[in-house]
Amino acid sequence: MAEEKAEEARLEAEETQAEMRAKAEEREMMGAKHMALPEDFIEHSRNACREMREAWRSLLPPGFREHRRAARREALLAMRSLVDATLDRMIEMTEDKPQARRRRKTRIEVQ
Image (tube, rainbow, N blue to C red):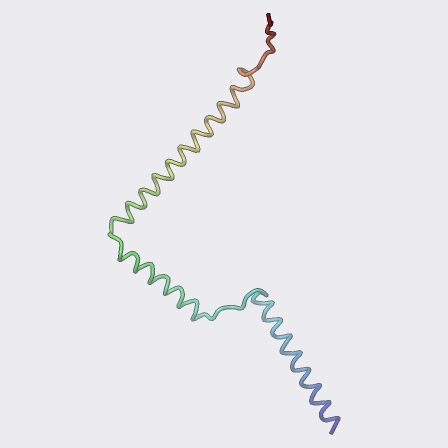
C-alpha cells in the first residue's frame, strides 16, 4: 500500500513537471512578458476602431478634411522655410568668420 502511494506521488510529480515545462515552452514561444490575445478579440478591436473612425468622419463636414490637410501642408512648408533660413544663416556665419572677424590688440593711452 505504501508502495502504491509512493508510485502515485511520483506519477503526479512527473505530470506537474511536464505541465510546467509545457507552460514554459509556451511562454518562450509567445514572449515572456505577455500572453497572446485571442484572434476574435483582435478582430473585434480592429472593427471597433474602424467604426469609430467612420463615426467621427460622419460628424465633420466634407470640406473639413481638405482644409485640414491643406493647413497641415502649409505648416510643414513654413517649418521647412524656417529650417532652410537658419541653415543658410549658419553657413554664412561659418564662411565669413575666419576672414572678417580677426581681432587685433589696440593700445589705449591713458592721460
